[in-house]
Image (cartoon, rainbow over all chains, first blue to last red; front, side, top):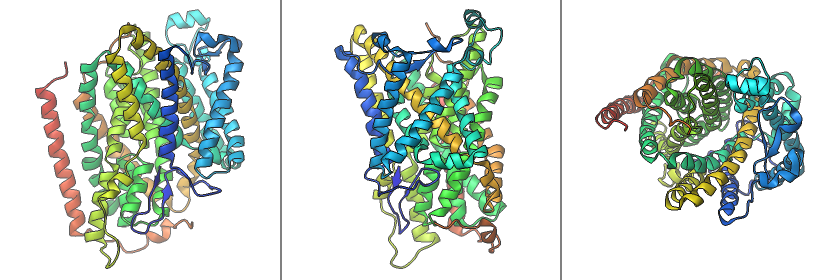
Length: 501
Length: 49
């Protein structure tokens, strides 16, 4: 999303490393994410009227023979073949995202070239992650694929492969990472995925509405925790413990406490920080988010496999940035489902990811309100300047992450359709949203790869960033993840996802 | 856009906490704990079925 200037601070994209736009942006990343996500959702709904408009998208199943791994989402398009579907998927993506790049003011040809490489690597990572030695889960699966061992990552292990591929490029081939940067847009990709996810969550939860609404109400605790518990403690640590100025401490507290990049930038604008301050904080947020994504799901699988929703809520509370948090929820779901399946428990897919996403979206909703409160305090009490504009209520809307409206829209429409139609139509809806979900997975893989490419760990040693990182380490590992765990436990312990039928 | 050098900025004198900052920290944390306690209580009174 692009934030409007507040109090003389220039507008700035929440992409972690500002991109070299050829022209001014015509639309915000949020608006584009909503448009693309709603477009996928609308195409999925076409199938309710008989025509299958999305079934041609390429999907990858667990494989030992790579020639049969790729297939179409719907058998109606099987004639395309795996490679034909992949080519069509690529063409559709490059066309839509190039239009998005144009709207963002980027050079379309440059974007399309880079995106081709990004897509090849990211999809290749998903393909590799579906290899039976990485993905097969149960002994029955291993026997079916003729493999004697497996890492049991499910075929969503491709996310981890994509992240590692991105990390290798960022840290071993920095010139290549720089070259790719035009197509490295994790915020856009994850927001599209979250808009589509709204429909998937609705269809998943429609059958268990009481459980679903109870889980959502429990997500409210996340808002209190992020804004009113984490923020003041991290701010105090930065100010008193490390001696940072207010200009650095407030964006840092928001970055560590709320939702990373977007919150740091919204706060930077609210308190009149120099634009570079939240950008530097943001790069730190992404680096630590990657560390979280790699470590926390593994810890969750090892110690919380019998409390899957505690683990899922924990990811939403502990991992910063929307992309990394939802990504961590996805990995956690895969790892815990795999472990449970090996013990003979088959949880219905989607519930853990839904809890993580709900927690994260609830936290996001209040960024605008928090930025307004900080702007009010800073312009009236901390740094009042005669003649300077004061905080206005309109800022709440201007800083509201608009992609959430897309998420809410797909959620409500899909829920209304699932609950208000006959069994035949709701069955078709589930199939249609399943096809849209393949796009969601593709956008997730693109997000994982992009986050990896942006995570240049050498930055930690540049520009004196080490001390800033120290605040982050102390706050995150000494406080945020543990408090997040306790709160998740208090509200989600003992609740299990429904079993798959 | 020049990147600020944190090493230089950290040599600057530490800004003392203003009363309004102390209020912000104290009130946020206090209200947060109270609301969490309330939510935990509600969670116990109305358990998930």
